[in-house]
Length: 216
Image (cartoon, rainbow, N blue to C red; front, side):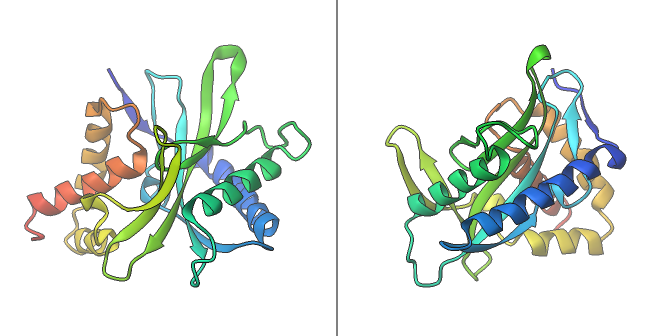
């Protein structure tokens, strides 16, 4: 059973500052091939970092990377590999970590870097990077890795991500943010899918609060 809590600001903010440094180094590392913009998203942007007191996973951050490739010079696989290799060079430039992060993990939706306490078999904290494209109609695509086929492609984000910024502004306007904070913790505690990321649970929570309060 989960027992999520919000992590105190003074604990996660120094880690976020370190991630800013890593991302800026990544921009410099890959600049000759691609450039990109980035944004902390979901709970990472809203001061809603959580951890499960009953687990050994620690807390995590979510970052969107929006690559500037208007002429579609690179394939989805090439973009993902450039960024994955770039992250490894930044976090492990000499074959060992200078920030404490392991080599980048490549999962279905995101690239993930983790700081581990190997002696105690714990993940202290991590960061998920999702490579996205804003479609301009309220929808968003991301680079999806199909492990079975070992292939990469652009795919649309689930329905909960549709017009997410607009929904957040509507919730704030109607002073419903405390409902979001309460429901987000409840939804994380109720989640049984170990592969579901915080960003997805956050988007689903926003969708839930909108539906419950007459957004549609």
